[in-house]
Length: 169
Image (cartoon, rainbow, N blue to C red; front, side, top):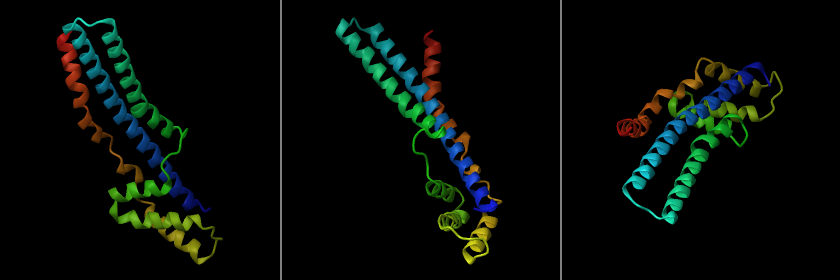
């Protein structure tokens, strides 16, 4: 594998890492919001009602189950992808995501990856095509397709329950 091919794969790996970091950030925001809403809901229900031990047990284990499910879905799964504990995005899937953000490189990147799968000895026409496409893709910052600021729209799911909790306290 030539140096240019290795650069493309390194850029794709950096994109995949940033993708999972973005998923983790989004998940942390949503999990915190879920936790605060559940805390307010269960506390409010407990304050307003005089429940039996059975109802309290159901409330406790229900909220515990929802919290654990949220923890797994929003935190553990993105962490396992970030640290490559489980199957992560393939290079082709990453190329589709990058292509949706940079339409001008969509086909070039996917074609380059498909050409790289075939072993081509140096000096062949296939190796020259891969080198040319890699040179065209070199200036494109793949990681720019992921924007952490896009997660700010989820902040309202934390801000509203947090403000309510502060007002109650």
